[in-house]
Length: 134
Image (cartoon, rainbow, N blue to C red):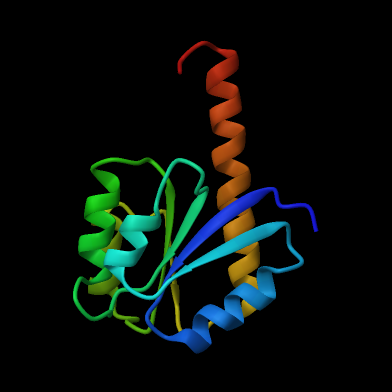
C-alpha cells in the first residue's frame, strides 16, 4: 500500500477507530489513532493531513480539541459525532470544522468526504504556491 495521506482519528470508542482504520487501509490513507483529545493533541504534528474528530470524549471534548488545533494548525478537521442537532453542527463549524458527519455513518460516504476535502485542500495549496501567495 502506498500511503499518500495521514489521518489522525481522535475517538474514544475503539470499535469505531478499528472500523475506520480497516476501511481506510486500502485507500492510500494511513490512520493514526488517539483514544482521547489529550492523546490526539500530543500526537498531532505537521505530517497529519486530516483529523477525524469525535465530540463526546472524556476529559476534553472535541470542540475544545478543535479550538486548540486551530490555534496552531490549519489541518483539515472532519467531525464524526452522534450529535446530529443543528446546534452541534453549527458549533463545530464555528470552532473551525471543515466537515461534519453524523453517526452512524456510511464508510463509503466518509471516504468520499475525506478524499474530497484532501483533494480541494491540495489543489488550493498547490495553486497558491504557484501564484506565490504562500
